[in-house]
Length: 117
Image (tube, rainbow, N blue to C red; front, side, top):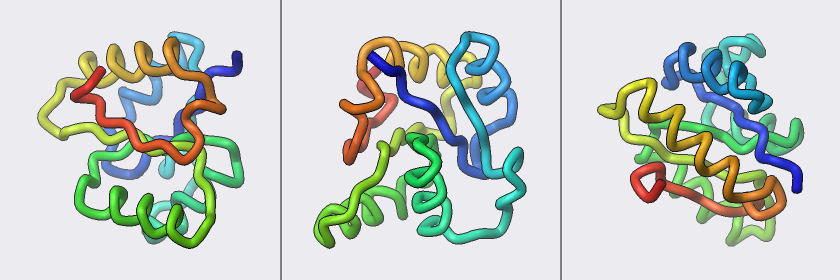
C-alpha cells in the first residue's frame, strides 16, 4: 500500500512539511517548488500531475475546486483540509494518522478534513 504523498500549499507552515519528511512521509510544497503566486487551480493541477494530495487551510476554495473537478470528470490525488488554528504538531499528528490509514489510491478524488482525524 503506497502512502499518500503530501503537497503543502502556501498557507501551510513550512514546519509541517519538515516534520512530515522526518516521519518518512514524502512531502513538498508550493514554496519548495517555487510556485508562489499561482492560482489554487494551478496548484491542484500540479499536485495531481506530480502525484501529491494537497494539504491546505483554504476552506473557501478547495471544496469548490473538488466539486468542479469531479463534476467535469477530472481527477485529483486528494485534498486534505486543515483549520488554521491547529498547532503544527497537531496538524502533523493528524496528517501522519491519515497517511498511515489511507493509501494513495484511496485518497484519489477524496476530500478529507483533519478535524475527522
